[in-house]
Length: 280
Image 1 (cartoon, rainbow, N blue to C red):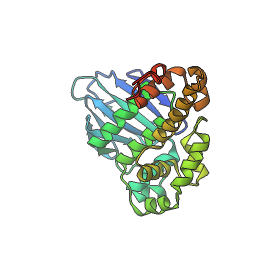
Image 2: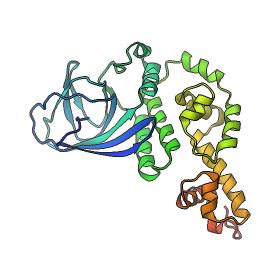
Image 3: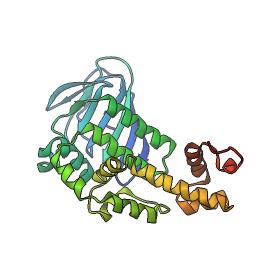
Image 4: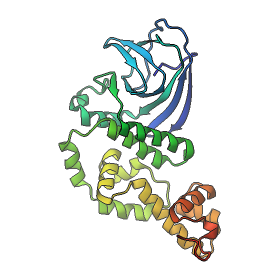
């Protein structure tokens, strides 16, 4: 992605403890070589439209919508735009420890060079990566208050980009007692859970927590927590509690958030939940 500056529009879609997601749009019209740039953090760039060329010590690389750009913090580069047109995309900035873990699953040598985790400045996108990214963007745009859902989406994107090296993941997964995780969640679902806190309680990383939980239960941790909240909401609704109070008590960020999730899950809005034949 082009470095932020007067010729680049940037907007933050979501920012949390684990990662930040930004949308960018380059307004550069000159076909010449830009000034030398460097980014202040490791960045994964996902161009969505347009094309340009990145010039770096690694060589001259064409960037298009099938590319995933990998920028090490502080690495110098320049850009040029041989073809007219506006390019745009999104950039993912992941906390250093989580990023290094994900990259090291694909390239174990990355653990030995934390300041330069990316060995290559470009990899090819895949259909799974493109879909995971689009879902992450949609989650950030439509449900930005739900940090757990966003963080799990970030880990999903990293998972499909950097496939597992194998043995390390399998060893750690065997150490995670998923039944104990379920018990932990059942006792705390009404609070504002953070993936980092749940993972720390079991001595594993958020990445391993999410992957192991999904493989063992067949669902995501976020969906499991949401369904626990909805089950509790249904019971409270049957007791006649006000919807706003229910939302606050079971962990939803707002009355509207609860209504949307309830309708999607049960097939009827809360106001009609106990009408005859309302729940399908």
